[in-house]
Length: 161
Image (cartoon, rainbow, N blue to C red; front, side, top):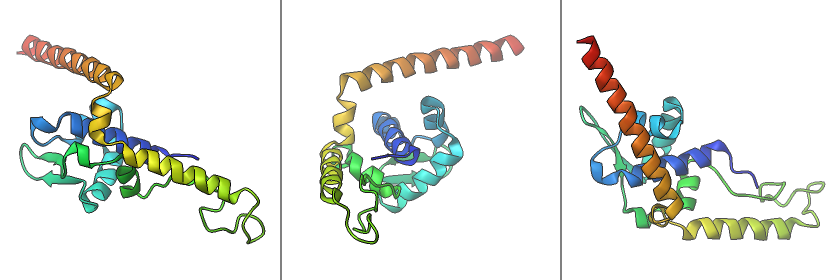
């Protein structure tokens, strides 16, 4: 199985959005800065996430994105599917034509693995991820780093005034 950066970045961005959900609309620029993801790439992903009604957009000053559903109601699998990603481990993409236009010897094994991976990701919500200790530690680190960057910017602006 190979989950591409599209799926990984979508889950990361949605988790970031869920973590900062109570702070009003979140800009993609903020997510891009915190998570090290290209802003233009996030724009493409969020277009798809909005079409699947996983996020809502708020236009104008102070605008950005919010979760369209409660974090407990958004599974990792739903995010991956929303950006047209799949978790298929078969060589044929599930088409049963992996060996000379016929099903290969191990097709059912790989299909079962794909189903289990999808089932696992479908059982994990953004809220579940937010509750993980490791995620909380990363959030704290990003918050500290963000505060030091903001302080540096304020000090630089004060020095220039």
